[in-house]
Length: 85
Image (tube, rainbow, N blue to C red):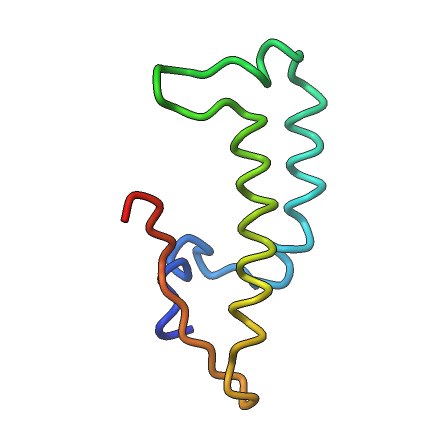
């Protein structure tokens, strides 16, 4: 997975399995939170849980688009998202 800046975060796990398990894991986390916990920002200028989950959904769309831009041979060059640029 050379050229993929997020690969180290997988810690050797299969990316397809991580992607498949993510909605279930997020659901379990969210089920344990109150509305106030989901809406409360941890600090000024930081995102609340709802905003973080919405960002994950946005990233899903962006990554899908990026992956479709590959060369057809399985090679995809990805870059980090730079929100402050």
